Length: 305
Image (cartoon, rainbow, N blue to C red; front, top):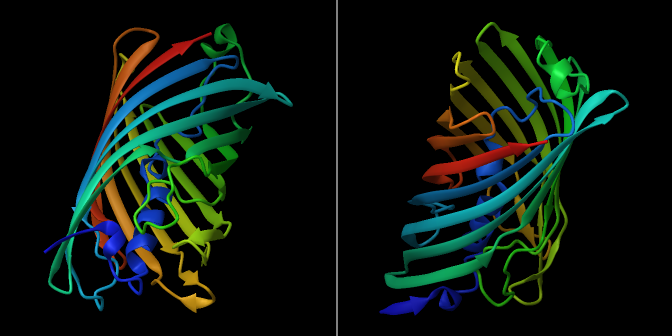
């Protein structure tokens, strides 16, 4: 028996909850060089393609088996650097487009489905408060980074495709805000980085048409170690950890606390002084709530002043 995603019994709230978490905890949360030193008045255009696939059963007590999704993710982004009180600041905008397919077995019945549309836009504003003055290109070429301390605010804007009568959606129909602090330390050719932040979410008052879904804050940590070669090619090892995020629907508990760790690797190759390509892979190390997937992303970056 083949059913659509919308035919799954209404008491299985964790299915939709996972997809909202998955959207909120996607690739932008494993991002090396987020506080990197750069010249001011720089512009960066990025285009990327990512593929994600995995088993995403979020509650072992539910009658759900073999819940597998595969997702093709396209994204375009733009970043601009500028001076703010003589400190380096940046604003970044990313808009994804998602093609997602999935299947699962619920109470012995096979369900399948697919979704296509824009995801939630992300806007990131950050300032490097210490160790990263706002320098033009000529001054920047003579400056050597030591230790950088920065802060940022990431905003998730509910621009994604959302249908309130369906459990599985690309968009989340809610706002998300993540204040974050980050440290970057240079050791000759090695850059070590550590970020810590907290996601806060507004309520989704159109969950399953007329239900209200709320989610507790999610604490996030990232660590990166990157090695730079003389030609500006670099490789990195990446890791993150998320904790929290218990979900509530109409004042009743509807999902478990997230406790998930992922590791990955990044390889960036310069094509010219203004162009580069980057390949990134990450996978789960342990998880207590879904998020058991592998992902790979290829991106192209163009810098101009």
